[in-house]
Image (cartoon, rainbow, N blue to C red; front, side, top):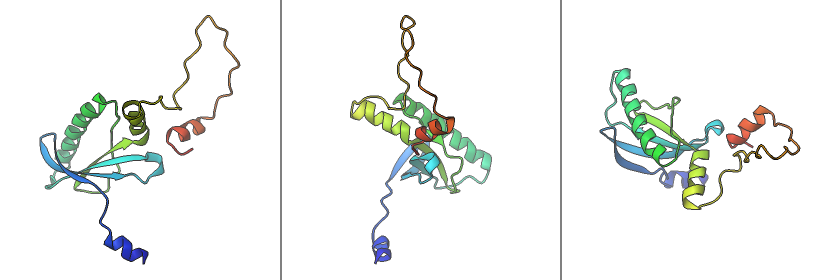
Length: 147
């Protein structure tokens, strides 16, 4: 029964026609299932894939440059997906922490992320008890959203 339900439901992957770096492309959104790279995938689907890999990389660079400008202006981070398995797709990742910070600051008007360091005491105040440092692995796991 589960198989029949999955076959009858359309994929819930939004697609939009876009023009980026002077190219008319289809933009497909998805989520990254890799736990070390949590975020929203932006997949730019090419109608005609250049045969020369250098031209494909040049196009990826042009798209990346435009995305860096637009996303950076909104305070969002965007990363080129070097592990994209599709030959007709140029992929990017909007990391989950970047998206979460954007939503908290611009939509919900909440506080900054709990992972951000606290403000340091001024020079005039004696430092209070210094907490033991977390192991580096723990810090990276928190920031990656694993812990």
